Image (cartoon, rainbow, N blue to C red):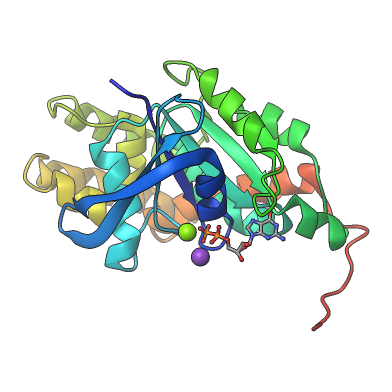
Length: 272
Ligand code: GDP
Ligand code: K
Ligand code: MG
């Protein structure tokens, strides 16, 4: 079977530009289940597999039907690797999605795009440090001109079968709830990484809740959430699990960007 890779990222980060550079031809293949958005799939130029261009999203929590496509893809397919395209000039905002993709537990490549924009605005991003911290290849790109795209093809050839060094954020007080949900998931076949599913469920992702509603003991899951939220309130850490999960991720991203993004030479925006 052909390897299948997927481009995932915020809107307007250069996914389609890169897709067009990396593929020879493409076709729209039917619909995604329940959504009218069509699947855009192309063949990689080097014959290394197929590439899917997913609709842009800011988070795996869909706000629209278009946006639910990516979360649904992750629930239903088992991609050989994800290619997460981020805008190097807006790294902090883009990393909110990256964290959730790294937690997915499949091999990933981070395409650090818009390097020309970052440079012209005086923003310096350190790809080597990001690579070391995130545990995945980080490849600087200018998708508009194709710069760096052959490095993406090379990295795809080298992707491991699994992602043994996957990023594992420590959710502190919520870790008990995560492992309790993971235990409930054991009896459900065909799921992606259980820790990822558990964290998405605990952050109330509607696509994941919907996919599990008929299979999971929802009463038990609600019980786990209530106990964890009571503990979060008791300790004064947060008023809800979703807020707590968001806060842990933001803290991580803030520290990561403090170390890897240098804005000391940043030029002010101008309107021309
Ligand atoms: P998508 O929404 O993620 O599929 O992004 P697109 O590929 O459609 O790109 C959005 C816009 O950004 C287009 O106008 C591209 O030409 C432009 N673009 C993409 N990559 C780069 C890049 O690396 N540098 C610059 N300056 N522009 C880019
Ligand atoms: K676009
Ligand atoms: Mg696009």
